[in-house]
Image (cartoon, rainbow, N blue to C red; front, side, top):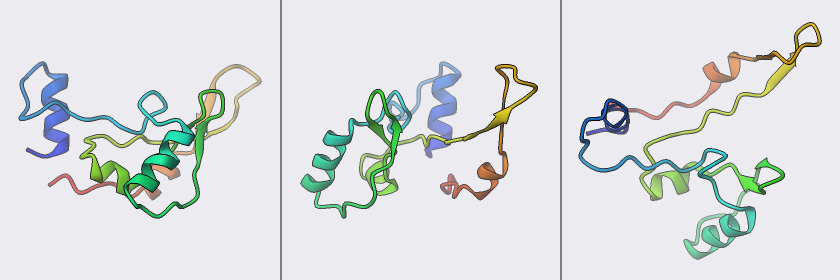
Length: 106
């Protein structure tokens, strides 16, 4: 069973082969210090660390960590483009989605 099938089964209240693993969203990410320590412990190269939430100090998790822990999900980071008519509605640049490297789910 691949990651997509596993997540879809879970969302449909069906039993997958294992519980889907979600790492890397702003809620399921790592604190910056923990992430750096984890990369050092696993002897992974310490590249640029991108903070995704400055209040919580959570980071964007590298693909190598996501693969190491068999994460079934990938967080899509969409940047707000601008306010529309000075209301609280934000537009998003969808070309970021097209440029994203999607994992092979076959």
